Amino acid sequence: MRAFFTTLIAIVCLVLLIFGNLHWQKKIEVTGSGQQTTFSEEELEAFVSVDPVLDFTSNWSELEKEYFQTALSEKRPYHILIAGSEQLGEGESSWPTLFQKEMLDTYGENIISIESRTYPETTAEFVEAGKQTDLITSQADLIIWEPFILSDNAVVPMKATLANITTVMNEVKEANPNTIFILQPPNPLYQPKLYKTQVAELKAFAEEHQIPYLDHWTSWPDPMSEQIRDYLDEDNQPNEEGHQVWANYLLGRFISQ
Image (cartoon, rainbow, N blue to C red; front, top):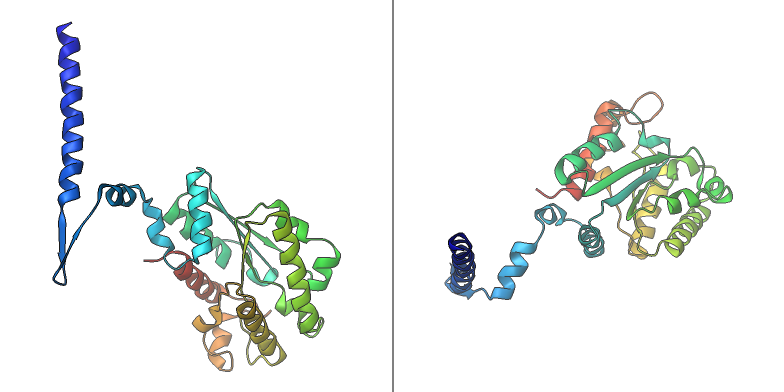
C-alpha cells in the first residue's frame, strides 16, 4: 500500500511539474526589435508539434507542403516519381540516383520514397500507347516530369507536344486528383536552335497554366558556349559533371538549408 501511495504522489508531482512548466513557457516574453511577444499555450503546442523535416520544405509550393504534411499525418512515405526520357540517365552517377540518395539521407526512408522511370517514346507515342497508366499506377504524390521535349525535337510539332502533355496530366489527375506535377526540360545541348525554342515554350506553358517548373538550365554553362561540351558525353547526354549539376539544382529546390 505504501508503494502505491508513493507512486501516486510521484505521478501527481510529475503532472504538476509539467503543467507548471507549460504555464511558465506561456509567460515567456521574447524581446526583438524593441517588441515583446507572449506565446499562448495553443501557439506553444502548435510550435512543438511541427515535424522538424518541414524545415527542409521551405522552397516547396504551398500545395506540395500541404500534401506532404498530409502524408506525415497518415504516417506513410510521401511518394515522388521521376519520369522522363532516357536523358535522365541510369546508374550510380545519374542525377536521379544522386537526388534519391540525398533526399533519403535528409528526410528518411520512412518519410519519403522515390522511384525513377524512363521512356524512349515521343509524347505522341507515349499517349498512343497509353503509357500514362504507368504514371497513374505509381500512385505518386508528386511527379517530376521531363516530358520528352528532346525526343519530340523535329519529330512532333510543339503544339502537339503541349497537347500531349496536357492529355497525360489530365488523365493522371482524373485518376489521382491529389497528384502534383512539376515540369522540367531535359539537359541543354551545345548551341541548340529549335530545341532551345521548344524548351522556352515548355516554360511558358508551365507558367501560363501555373504548373511548377524546374528551370535547371540556369545552373548549366551557357549552351551557346564551348564550355557546355564539358558536361555532355558524345551522345549529348549528361556526363558525370552534367548529372551533378542537374542533381544539385533539384536538391536546392527540395532541401532548404
